[in-house]
Length: 193
Image (tube, rainbow, N blue to C red; front, side, top):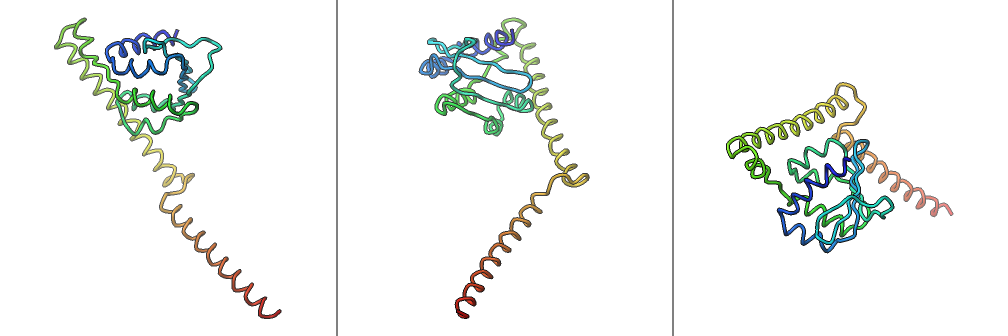
């Protein structure tokens, strides 16, 4: 059921963007799996028309895209950094094609809504939706920063980046001193023999 809810809008979007369908036609027959644990596991197969359909139960998966749930609103808001946080496995060329199309595929929701409710109301609904999406994205980012600060400052379960860099520098210096000491010990040992 979830697949049909996702496929219809996606195909509607693809029908409005012929460039995306043409690019997907070269991937006809390939299957992509989108996982947002524990909420979503959706496998879609690219059709010869460039649209997508639900994958057959035994269809081999060519590429797997795994996303954390907090990434979805950022992707909907077309946050470029969010695409780099998607874990991808499988056919690299196919996955790259899907990601590139995803970055450049935009739904003109206002135009679709204007046919149903009129231009002015569609414009206001679209603006409200965008404001809500930006608010949600900002809230998730603020909560992440607050949690990170809490875990590094108030309840130190994580190390601060500056402390980690200092520690790494000290370890490298100690390693260098140990190597120099070993060289000196070997030189002294050779002199005694």
